[in-house]
Length: 156
Image (tube, rainbow, N blue to C red; front, side):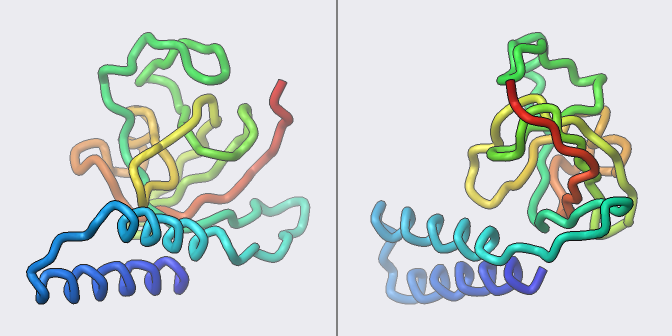
């Protein structure tokens, strides 16, 4: 969590410097900031947990899948359904079970990774509406969460 806070502080600092000079960020600076953000949040591996406990993966921003994706095919081949407890993650193997905990209210939900994403910078997971409702973020659309791997499967 400290790494995530540091990344956000750096990004805010860069934005403040940029606004004070009256110049906008150019594409190269924006890409570099995104690379630093991604590297900082994924650079430090968490120590392995005992087999009977979930393994902490990362902290970050969760968002709710857009309704326009309902019925479309996911990366796993399944049709996306907002009523299932599913999620999209950029790199976890499809079929992996992840415990997602809302940091603000400590509500948790176990989801199955069945798609790739989210692609907007700063987000670590996209949740179906059903999963988002279980942790209290369906209306707000996003929240800071902790991800823990419950069980991993291999893609295939």
